[in-house]
Image 1 (cartoon, rainbow over the protein chains, first blue to last red):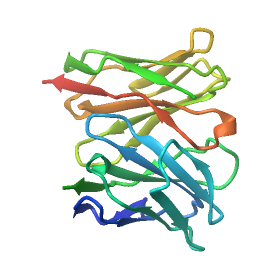
Image 2 (cartoon, chains in turn purple, orange):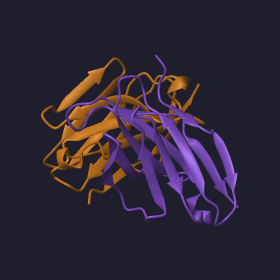
Image 3 (cartoon, rainbow over the protein chains, first blue to last red):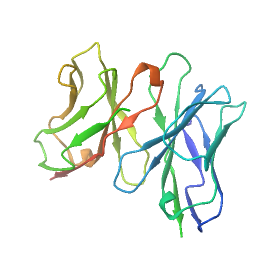
Length: 114
Length: 113
């Protein structure tokens, strides 16, 4: 059983560009959350998708947007990249059901903005 | 919103000794507290979690305690081994927040052989 997978593993962009990161949840999981982890810090919640809709959102600007597909995979899009967007972007998936199900994280995509 | 503080930021122990990491949270509505281990170049991996209806939970060499009154919870690792070296994160969430986790700043643990 494959765990959470993310692509690409690494990405280098320049300021002002746009980026799309991808996530495939663990088999049987239908809820996908995205987190940003700056170097030396804990992950920060960006947003969560369930049934192809954004269910919750953290304190991130509208430059951060997402999508969930019918197969539960998800994309994170960031527009007008800033140097401060350089971070490890983590995707986490969880089982359907009640809130506070265990979240399983992928290996992340490391984004460097120059 | 919820705020989680974690101490210490770094912890160095001799192999075989115990390691303790402490976290405090601000929102009394929080009722789910997972702990994650993150190794270099990898995503966080859940090692143990506790819910607010339980005061303590143990899984082999790892245990977590929760004090709801004081709003703090702790991770205890006994008989540490070199493979326990990693960054550990505590987190908290509350039911109305669904699966949104608020993380502490992390503790870098080094187990010296």
